[in-house]
Image 1 (cartoon, helix red, strand yellow):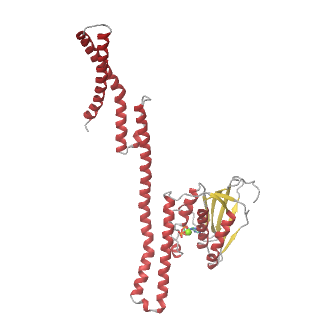
Image 2 (cartoon, protein in one colour; image 1 turned 90 degrees about the vertical axis):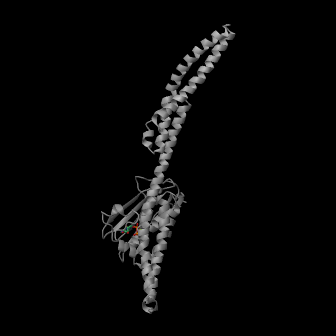
Image 3 (cartoon, rainbow, N blue to C red; image 1 turned 135 degrees about the horizontal axis):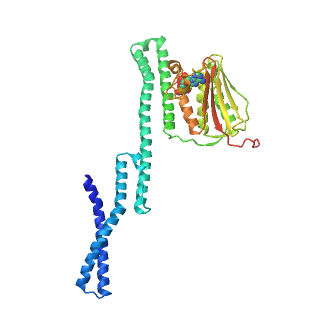
Length: 362
Ligand SMILES: Nc1ncnc2c1ncn2[C@@H]1O[C@H](COP(=O)(O)OP(=O)(O)OP(=O)(O)O)[C@@H](O)[C@H]1O
Ligand SMILES: [Mg+2]
């Protein structure tokens, strides 16, 4: 729309207001002159016409001054919304505290909501694109491995008693990897887009920690690794999502087993930091291969593995610590990692106590 046409719309509004006001005032003036002052109709009509012209001019300029700038603001806001230029909207000012200003303010508020929503959708969209790229990359390895084993079997290895079982077992291992990968992918996707909400309840850590470590003892023994849970008060409760804390512990202890050395040790310790008595520190440490300082900041990134081949060979996809980080952040807590190559690593999470530290025992 051309500038002059837009402008004429504002003039037209001013014209209409001026016209109605002047006609009304002329009619009132005519009736007053005629009835009250007994002035002849023709004379009264000509005076009323002059009044009409005067009122028209005055009300035209008044309405122009009152409406024009604000209609321009309204126009500007809606134009900025349609062009997604939200930052310019914030600078617009209103002048009077009337209905028109109310509409302008409301429109500015709505534009902020639209802006936030667009930003959120853009974030999700970027995340999805990146995620799909990562997934397809991660899926390729096991799928190609399965394809290779099946092709070899079909090409004659099926008849060979010595290798057919071995190849099928290898294909099965890759199928299992795909199953774990799918489970972790669903979990992390929900966590990263904020779809998975934490259900906070009182959680007794003693039972949870022992439960998880016992469930992983067999796995550790197979690798000749021992799991030790250091003694701590069995009454300690924290405000957390039980299943998510369980998941965190599983991921940390599994790593401590996976990246350990034969004869190594995994220790789970709960400490009560004196400076922050409402918190507990839950620590999983190992005597394993450790992590180089340069890799430390990246280990919680999704799909990051220090040694891809070692991790893959152990069935790892690089999602465990990313899941841990998201769960801990969703709880408003912290994850600290200390590590020294060839000595071991320590992962510490903070959790918030539900009871006041002085509360009597159960
Ligand atoms: N306790 C640890 N000691 C040494 N390195 C570790 C330890 N925990 C994690 N890492 C390193 O950090 C990387 C990322 O860990 P993460 O748990 O996210 O993935 P993963 O164990 O490879 O696979 P997943 O947990 O998804 O099965 C690992 O590949 C490993 O290189
Ligand atoms: Mg892991």
